[in-house]
Length: 287
Image 1 (cartoon, rainbow, N blue to C red):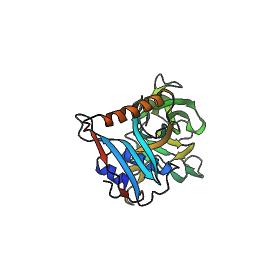
Image 2 (cartoon, rainbow, N blue to C red):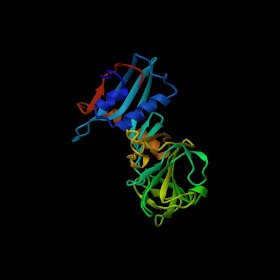
Image 3 (cartoon, helix red, strand yellow):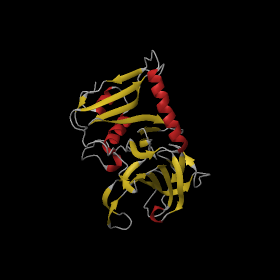
Image 4 (cartoon, one colour):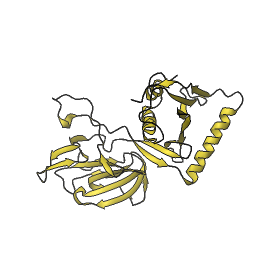
């Protein structure tokens, strides 16, 4: 039973926190739902326990509002990525991120600063991650190479499209990974280039940006720190994930609709014991 909030209940059932966050985001962006969800909202979550798996997976979530049903399905596409989608295939894809340079030091974060080369105030819309010249740079998520080459102040840069509305940029490279080319699909963690100091730079480091919906966002989450801790000593940690809108179409939409039909057939099968529904319950507004 959902006693307090949907996300808290999902996490209490050992549901992946990234996916729980994506569920919350889906509820917030669904224009057909009131914001926030009012007290008295009824929610039904369906978990399926696969044979040999200890913890069940959430496969369907339904919110009842003013006599209407809003249903979300958890679906894995042909690339192995998880999508949270409604019955029409429209929804969200949570994209987990890895560090581009795991051993790097944060030398300049997101926000206002004095540009170390131009010596003027500027809003730094990315982060500088210092590492020795030639240190490998990894793709933070799977995606397609949209651009690589010289790009003004970025110097030698690689741009990856990691989702419909998600782009990552890697600047000041000394060189690119051998064989890298436009249109290439790369996987999370794959080496795409090497740390350098090309473009507007004072020393070897990676200048890293995340673009979401055409705007740059702060890509880092800094762990708790005290005033005595210097920026160079801070542990650097990326946002755990970025949630981006998706619309399934073509063969993916066909696979998704077939998944929905197969799910319903399995639920209707006599003697089915793998489905673990959470009873509808009154919940508080989403946190």
